[in-house]
Image (cartoon, rainbow, N blue to C red; front, side, top):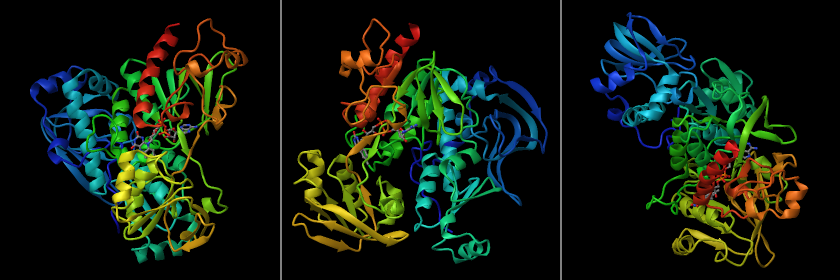
Length: 560
Ligand SMILES: Cc1cc2nc3c(=O)[nH]c(=O)nc-3n(C[C@H](O)[C@H](O)[C@H](O)COP(=O)(O)OP(=O)(O)OC[C@H]3O[C@@H](n4cnc5c(N)ncnc54)[C@H](O)[C@@H]3O)c2cc1C
């Protein structure tokens, strides 16, 4: 049995600190909670919360003892005992996702019971309690992850692409899970063989002790774990944000903190491209850099804290703009109505035209370099394709683990596409080799990438036994789902604000006497921010800035 990756997660930006996880409240703090809740007696043996319960209340122990337990079919594992002044709950209290553990009274006494909506109100209005509760919930989630006390078991292998995908989905959602590695546990392999579980069925995910899923999609996992259950998709939100990268999350933080009813739809998991960055060094306020996952973890927790609803693995499939109200279609769901929309769907890397590329995605071909991918490359040669900052950053990061990093660029060098500080690090690093005017032409392997061929500047094709290729070349916007509603530029990015010509506005039948606001698209009340917007500077700071600015204009639109 292997332990899961314990990299920082969206709801867990720091390491586990037990003293911060289980604080004791002062009498003044307890009385502030009591003002919103109700006191009630408890009886030994009483179950206050069952694993799987939704929208559970918070309990503050006044007297007696309450234990948090992780139940399985046959046993219970003690997570912690709460005594007078201590409180129940963990990160799911904020997200509204089903409870992971059971809460049972082990010594009769008295508690304050605080319903979830009152808890969320306290978090938004009482700065001191907000800090104590948020910190404890996040720390407790980290503790669950560190102790493998999740309600998901995943049986996988690094030789199958689904394993990396599912591990990433659970990790970046901050959901604790146990990982059984088939490559190290022959008994697990034997068990799967007996149940005729084939290579294509890997990974097998056992969800909440009952649902057994073979190579499930992220949507199936999200559904099984009830990630989106608490969210009412049919209600008309003030603001629907599409995409939970830095731009979308910034808009969610500003929108929700300024009193808007905000719903975020994310087709995969929060973080976007920034979430796949090993270290962001040029974002203001982080002089020694911050990993993308850590930065996004904080932003995600912040958006939830202010009351934004974030749906994961629920992408927008179509924008409808011909009726009296804008709606967004989502996969397997109702049409989501909105009074205003912010499009923050970003961009993704252009895939080189290699026939069998998709066969190796996640099994040797990657589009991000996080500690999870780096772990697979220790002591090996790897290839990074691309000459931009993302490629440079990935090369420098991977060189800390890999034997050698080959950077392949089509152009004559890096000077036109990469920041000077990264170029210098690449030049000075003995394990990084730059190959200019070179491109990948073929990938070979049996399920897992084993060999790569590239054409160099002389036109000669070389083969190398390299099993890990990171593709980070050129971005294409995620605008295919817009259904012709908005004016796009020649590369498919959304046009907004002063970039829209009077002809484009006339073609779009712009109905107002005022011109579009900055960041407003060719439809009133629909804004485009971050990498998806034509002319945007492709940086975390600009995505965050645009997401925040757009909210100011959303207020104006809603007032009109
Ligand atoms: C590896 C890497 C390293 C980088 N390093 C740096 C750095 O050091 N400094 C820096 O300033 N910038 C860096 N960048 C660039 C930076 O990450 C991007 O500019 C930034 O993430 C753009 O933010 P965004 O929110 O606009 O879009 P994205 O980050 O692309 O996020 C878009 C989100 O929308 C979601 N989405 C897409 N389509 C749909 C749909 N139909 N429905 C719902 N959701 C959808 C996606 O899943 C994604 O989560 C890096 C990028 C990469 C890839």
